[in-house]
Length: 167
Image (cartoon, rainbow, N blue to C red; front, side, top):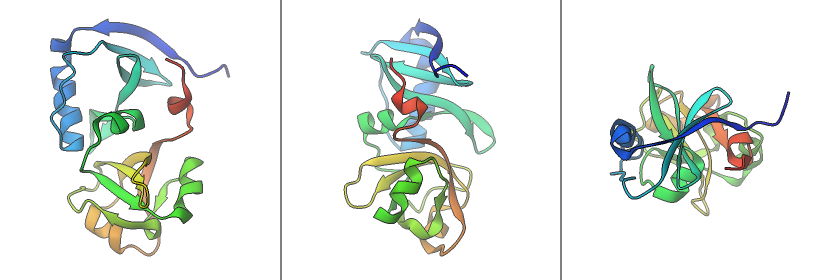
């Protein structure tokens, strides 16, 4: 298999992306305005991705049973959402960096409003830096109480192909 690369890249007008902006905003609890940026849509490894000023800021995945735009880790670094996160201890980090699912035992605090099936981003509890993102298997409250089992199905992590791809 060849190197992972971006395909079918095309510029789009801001007005075509208003629904995407709304979905992104909802997943992060923010108002997103991309009107001043250069927006492109493309495909990467079977997923639709969105680039803003040549940075991959969002991808379209299944969330709670329907397709929706969610931020990539670069999008999270750009927009700094206050919502939809779970914080993990140092012990969990090496596993997450290898693309492992996030175990409940490693989560110390999480946004209690995260629904099962919802988008969640995982951060380092010490630095706050985004490490990975995924889909919640349980709600935010339950994540904090779990002592065993998976809490988040990981879809994207620092160092993966999507993170590393050259735009």
